[in-house]
Amino acid sequence: MSNEHLHIQTAAQSTASSSARDLREQLKQTQANDTRLRLFLQFGQLLLSQGCQENTALSLLQSLCHLTSAQHALIAVEGMGKLTIYAQMGRTLPVGTRLPMIGVLAQMLKNPVQFELHLNKNTQLWTHGDASQQECLIPLALNRHSKGIIGLSGKELLLGQQETEVLQTVSGLFALAIAQMQGPAPSEVDMSVIESLTPREREIFALLPGGLSNIELGRTLGISPGTAKIHVERILNKLGVKDRTQAAVKAVELGYKASH
Image 1 (cartoon, rainbow, N blue to C red):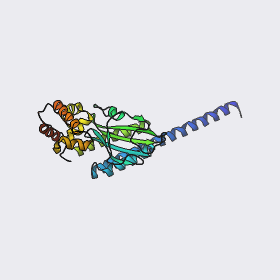
Image 2: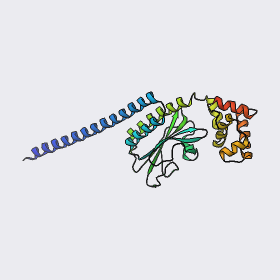
Image 3: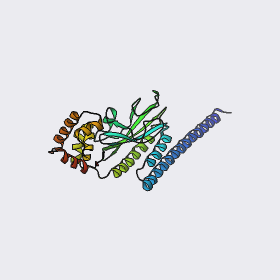
């Protein structure tokens, strides 16, 4: 075989190999797009039929685990200055657990919230006790106001550009669902007042509509009545109101309900 024939044959083989690679990449991209479309359709149908329910959140977590190869996942909703586990799968803190917004949680949910994947290890969210597990926290926000987080944990998380785009879209959709569940969003002025309160003050502020005394506030939060009194006085000062009754009215206006 002549050198010319060898060159032609080699060029043909290279072209065929390149075409095969392009075909595989196109197939991979099509499959990824199909996966994302199914996730969005399923999530949208659940929100339409069930609203922001725990089953809807659990279905979303299952889809996100499949997408990112996570083994453990949770959704936590912000309220009363803390995060409350709303739905979970795998080895995480149980539903209903309340977490203080400190450290990375406070950092990522500080208004105005920026969408960013926070990669960590060994935070208090997980119970698997495996130091080799990766962790990804995704903020839930609407109009850059914090609504909670999505947390994912696994041996090797897939967090490429496509997965990140899905997480960004889904986080916005679920934040909107949470906002509808919680009622009308506070005004900018209201938000500035709430943000001026410390996490402990937000807890006490949220309890004021229940008419609790300083003794009852202390018993509920595990602090002394004197400490509760100091927090209440600071809240009144920051709100610019005269007494705890006016503060309780303000709390109700902002969506906090009277409950013990």
